[in-house]
Amino acid sequence: MDARSMSSSSSSEWRDWSSLPEDLLLLILERLRWSSHPSVTAVCSPWRSAVPPSYPAWITPLLLNAADVGTTNIRYYSPYFHKNFEIDRTLTDPGAKICCSAAEHLTTLCTPDDVVLDADMVSGSIRELPRLPDSKFNFIVYDDDGRLALYDPCNHERGFEIHDKPESFGFETDDSYLVESEQGELMAILVGRRGTPVHIVKLNEEAMKWEEVESLQGRTLFTGTLTTMMRSVKIKWMQNKVFLPKLYDWPETIQVNLVLRDGELAFVPKSGGENTILKDGEDYMEKMWCYEPGQRQAKKFWGTKSVDYGIWVNFST
Image (cartoon, rainbow, N blue to C red; front, top):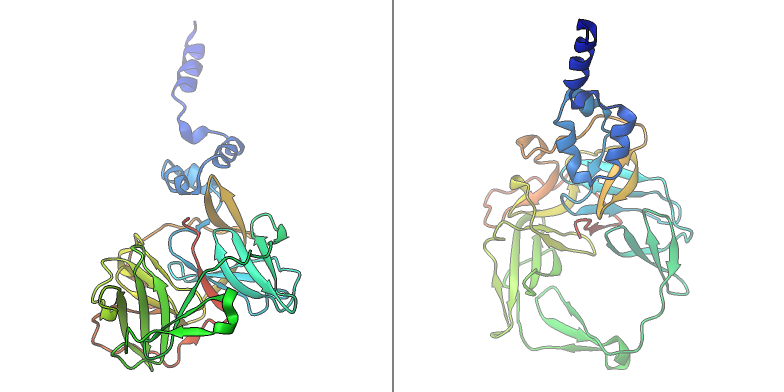
C-alpha cells in the first residue's frame, strides 16, 4: 500500500459523528422522542444546526384559549416559555364550548343539541361521543361561603342537597376554585379582590371542616379557569406557587404544528427558528401572575391582561 492509500484510509477511519449526512440525521430524529433532542444538539455544532426547532408541550400545564372554537384558531399559552402556540385548525361547529382536554384530545359541547364532540388536535379527526347512560353519580359544588352541595343529574327534580357541614371557609374571597389533589383531597383556592392574598384550604372529611394549607410541598396550582390543576413541575421557580391566567405583557404568537412522537407532544414552528434551551432561571419569571402561600407582600394585579375563554390542559399524561 502506498503512502497516498494509507493517508486516505486513515482519514476515512477517523471521521467522527459530525460528518453524518444531514438527511440521515433527520431520519434518525424522526424516530426519537422529543426529550432526546437536547442530547443530540449537544453532540456537535453541525448537529445542533441540523435539528429542527421544537417546543416541548409537557413541561407545565398549558392555557388552551379560543374565543369561538368554530371560527378561531386554537392557541396554547405556555407559562414557561411565555409564548402563544397557535394551531391553524378550527372545529366545524361555531359556538361550541370547550369542556375539557386530555393530551391531544379536546372535548367540546355543541348547542342547541347538546352534542359532545371529541377532537384529535394532532390528526384533525372529530367524532361524536355517545350519550352517557343514566347511571347515578354526584357533582360536588359549593358556594362562596364554603358550604357543600351534592347534585345528582339523574334525579334532577331533587335539586341540590346542601350539607350543614363544612361551614365557612373563614376567609373573604372574590373568586374561588375547586380541585382534587393527587392524594384525593378536596381543596379550594380562594382569591382575594385584588389577587392577594390567595388562601388554599382542604376539606378534613373526618371533622367536615376546611383547613388552611400553608405549603404546597413543592407542587404548583394552575387555576382561574373552568379547570384547575395541581402538578409537580421540575422548574424550581414555579414550585409552591399558584398561577392565574393574567399576564403582565402579551406574548409572542408562533404558528405551529402539534406533533406526537412516542407519547410526547411538541410544538413545531412552521417557519423555522432556533432550538429552545430549557433553563430554570430568573428570565422567565413574572410573566404570568403567581402567588406563593404565606406571601405577605401584595402583587400587582390591576392592569394585567386577562386570558379569557380558556382552560388549563395537561400534555404530560
